[in-house]
Length: 248
Image (cartoon, rainbow, N blue to C red; front, side, top):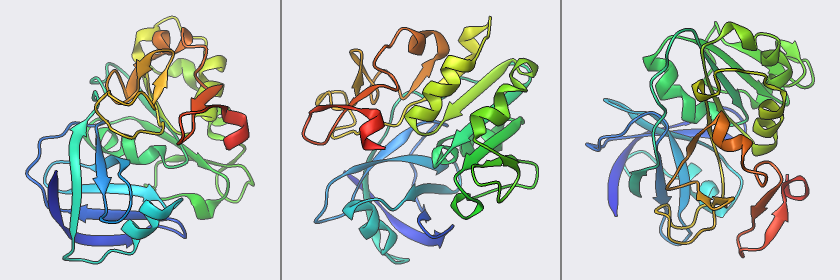
């Protein structure tokens, strides 16, 4: 277990926070940490910034994230990692497609490699860390394109040689089903699943036998097309198989 001193906590919107911290770890875009706050359980967190400035960006949805969001500058944040396979380097014209908090995982890659960013949320109040040139979709039409980010992106899909995707699993499944690419190997999806160990032991994050924390979190279009559980089933905290539609 490592720890770092918190440099800053930023409230990006009503429910999303960024914690910036000092670290000497070596991390690559797409990797994640298992973050622990004393008294509550560990949670996986995508690195939203790496290099000279390390950060995690997350949505408050349970006890662990609520306690993380209440921490103060100068306090210690405990973590293991980084874990997971990073995003491969892009080739040719590149697009990034983010739904929900998926933008956090993609940001280190976006900052390193030029490309078009498509991001979406239910309303403008759910968006965070936007740049002026981002292509935005909101389901209520309060900012940018009225609809979801999949609807916004698929019309432009053929323009790109490499595509990176991160967001809610139902959103990524919808995009996977609507894509019609010949160069499947240049589409990369980063999966978000319940993780208890982060090192491939507990099997809580598995999809068709693939451990998201170990064999992922990044998978290719071709790999996901063969996973009939993707976007359909996942495990609850107790290990029970559940329909994703029931737990959204």
